[in-house]
Image (cartoon, rainbow over all chains, first blue to last red; front, side, top):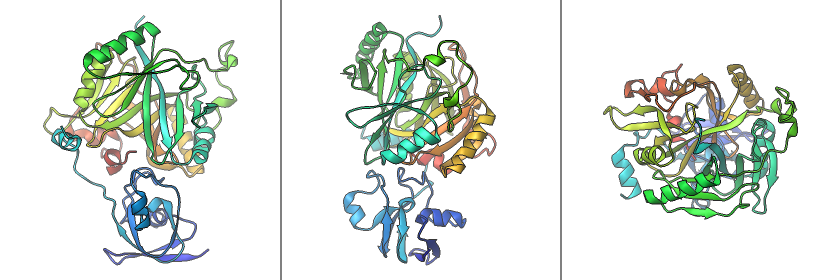
Length: 111
Length: 309
């Protein structure tokens, strides 16, 4: 079992991630924070990251959140990638937006 | 007879990213019964105590989420009448031929203000299990396999304009409002629960900027003990749990939220209460929104409002 070091560019923090766990699993099992946790299964998109350096195995993830052109630019969902080398990543996904309001409804649906 | 018109949620078509993984989950872990596969590659399931041929339909796609949510109505005449009523309300409708879904009659499909495709249909083939109809035992091997919910029960959908959704469901489809959560202005609804029966909810909506989102499809269990058993089975199978076991203030249901292998949230729940259409809706204020959703913690987790497919 190989262990890889994942470095978060914003904070400089590092995380040890073995080659049997997804990046998100490795973070959660150590009680660490940094990447928002959603469905953990590639569907909801809140754990989106961009891999700036390094390689990883990618499992299927929703195209609603990672388009083909994004995938080739290193974007991925942290719940679906297993590092195969040391990684340098930046966190894209966000949680904790304000509640939707009726006026936001209208703005976002073009009414 | 009290229950006429729209009878109940009948089917939900869910998109999955990997059919093989999905079939293992829905068939073995959740413990639904596979009832068929069609030429599009869709796979059909029902819960052990359901009387109709299918209720959950899986389709492999590159995005998770829900394709459509269907209600069974009491007769073809009601289907025709409601189709005319929906059109008169101003929503275009589409007739999907019988047999497009296995063992399912003609469906009338339309889009509601929240962006979801809703269907009505009057006919679906019977579940092929005579042992559940003639001198039926109270349980059987299928009721003990996996989590084994009694039935597909309801859905919670996220999208904009939920006041328009409520107006449509109440004034066209004959539903009534059972509960609501209001925002801090004391007027605007954050969430609505609607019934076409005497269940505390047959469908619910939360206000959300993006249209056509799935929060969860829900499956009924018999008891709180079965909810705990479901949680054990989820952990034994490394299922991603979102929240619970806990209780909702709204509907009083005891619950677990968790995710299928494609990230679609599902609920296994027990309890709740029976309602009647002459009852006033229950209202939760903004100060108590936490208890409305998660009664024990009395606080929302960010995922409740933001993690959808």
